[in-house]
Image (cartoon, rainbow, N blue to C red; front, top):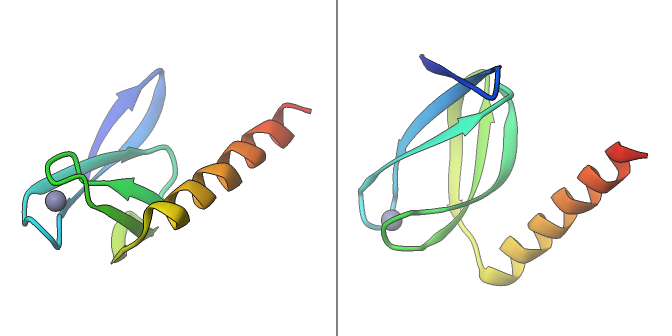
Length: 83
Ligand SMILES: [Zn+2]
């Protein structure tokens, strides 16, 4: 597992291939478990990814609507954390 330090936090660097264009993507996570949206840097295709125990468990194509909805959920979570 590749790790690196981001803003003083030991973050995980997950690498996976885009199912659409087959380009290598890497994404940094502060947690070894993550479920959320991701956009391929190359073909701009949207995916819902699930990471469990430092490994990519699933990578499903998603729609812009679902992507926006997930971002709203994450924004709401962040909002509630502050209070
Ligand atoms: Zn792609």
